[in-house]
Image (cartoon, rainbow, N blue to C red):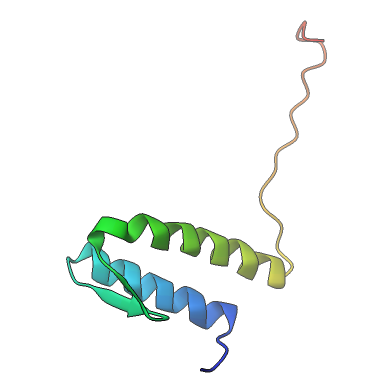
Length: 73
């Protein structure tokens, strides 16, 4: 079995999501996914997107909020 890059793995997961959402089944790494368990694929997609962003040196969006002067301690 070949080792897939993060990008290739993400594309495979997104293909599986599209197939599951269309009511078809899709086998990925020996596991068959259907519409009933597409949530597992969404979790994998989020993980791979975060991993790919990290590999590319991107950081998740963060916004600094300052509560000073608003009466909060």
